[in-house]
Image (cartoon, rainbow, N blue to C red; front, side, top):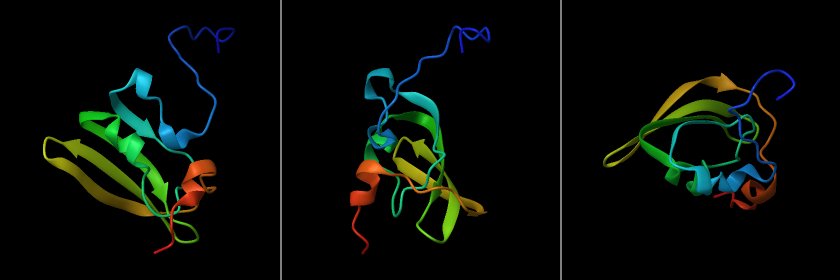
Length: 97
């Protein structure tokens, strides 16, 4: 990225389930892999009030959702049906009930 002229980008490699709490709170989070059942709680907790998270959600049938953090909790909106690769790591430990 530096070779391309980007100097204000911070990168971290690892399981995205936990997010990056040391850099939180975030205005926006985008997931490009689908958690099977629920958005990982650590990611929701890292949004600032007014912040948005956009993510595919589901195993075989997936929906793109937008979650906005409010003063009183979270608002969830389904945008459209999608198909993304599954989120791996800790996300796969979510129960199927």
